[in-house]
Length: 296
Image (cartoon, rainbow, N blue to C red; front, side, top):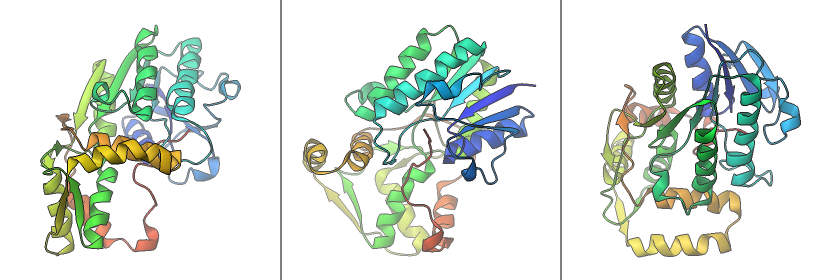
């Protein structure tokens, strides 16, 4: 039986990771910042610590043979930078894993990172990946195309009555459900894979995602295509006119929208079912933000 240490366990993906490893019979240790946010978390043991403070991590991985990190900044407003969390906090985890004799360290990265190295969020992640690959610990890097939760922005636009897309909306994506990504991650670890570019079972153009959102709501699709030059202009001015908690995710989103984001298809969850679930929710019950899936 494996002992798996999951960092970022209370986030969207982290919860799915804990559930998947628990389902496979592993002993799951969950790293959390706040034990009060652990309702319904499938973990055998909780470790309350902050990965940004290495002194709190001493001996937390004792007995673990696998570490899986879904740790990173999304829209947190605690004054930490991407480099503080996506790089340094994960590096703190890696160094502790090395000291604890962990056999494999899996990290959730992003697809097409080499094409977005100028984006601060991606640059911090890529810097950690380089450190992981240079470590004595066997690496597994998981690079997902995008989460179903990211597609909520398309649904929100459709619900407001109009979707706004850049260019012709023809770039493709195969977003993946958190449960399917957790399964793909566990499979990659079991197979000893060093790297996996992964997505969901269905591939859509951006226009098709928007049309699916309108169709779910039973409304005619109203889509406005904006010139790509406006996207590029927005990228230039964003850091000057918005706080980092807004400009950072927006920079990533606007860059990812300018390329195909298609990974190896895995899983069986359908985006239509996700949109249907969103349409059935009461507005007050839906969490704010899109990829608030990783915790520091």
